[in-house]
Length: 141
Image (tube, rainbow, N blue to C red):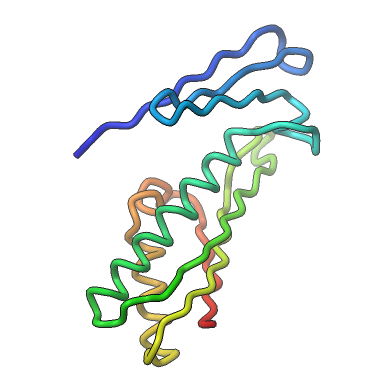
């Protein structure tokens, strides 16, 4: 299996500094700051990338599971929201909420929910975050 990497650089102190995150392979670079991470400031945060990774991973795993079960999805659209709150005085990503809507012809609600739950539990990003609470709200369109 391939290895993927990214890098980040931070300059200055925590609240007054700034940084850049870079995914070289994708030619993607984005600035980040204290306000973009812990407040509602402009820019990106590591949690944005975590949410994007989880949404993409879940959507792909869900589509794969549906297909394996004999239901080829027309589409799977997922939004992941990473929640950061203080726990024991330290900022902690303690929950990820997955909201997904999928178009899947000829599938029952019961089978749809079963496949959604299997994808939630087994996509590689979910498996990485087993210590975190990962919530799922799956909707059949």
